[in-house]
Length: 234
Image (cartoon, rainbow, N blue to C red; front, side, top):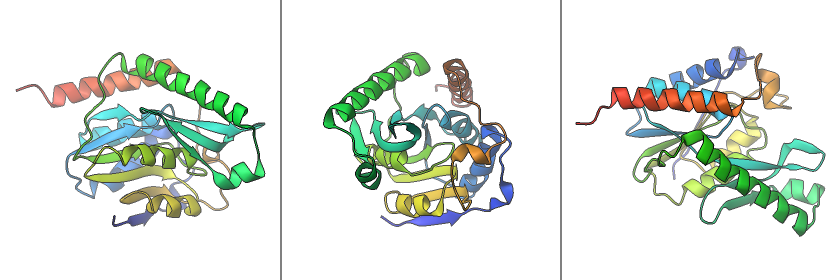
């Protein structure tokens, strides 16, 4: 695969909220004139960002359900990530695992818990709507930011099995090390800002509230209605 990584400008930081971050991300993606795009959001935080991208590109929006497994006592640091699928994909951060050893029983329980949550979220968030077909399309995977990249790498691992035309990671911010790593696994990585030093995604947003399920459902319903109106059946 050919890789092109866009280095963003930190002048945009801090983002006011996820919607502003999504609009800035959409500006960069719109300039790429993408063929037959479909936008996949990593919920919950990626949904408001992805909604702005899908609106600007007039592209359908779906979810890619991935859950991180945090380091014990540091839940925000991703020791591993689980992505929906049959079977679910599990990606381990080898370096963090060496520094934070856990038992196989602990990991199995953590994976099972996240698989259960993934199933719950698909049922609740999408109200029974079927997943979008991805084969042959330009797939844009969106989150509200990346710290270690473990969850996003798990998502890419799952998506490589669907025969997409082009696989693009689109994120408002990430450390340069994560961007370089993701560029080896996607066709393109679009990242608005790469702050240094980088500690946590939320430090670079004025509003980084935890989204409730109801907020996610409302955003997805709006996107569904907008897509249905803009692309009426023949």
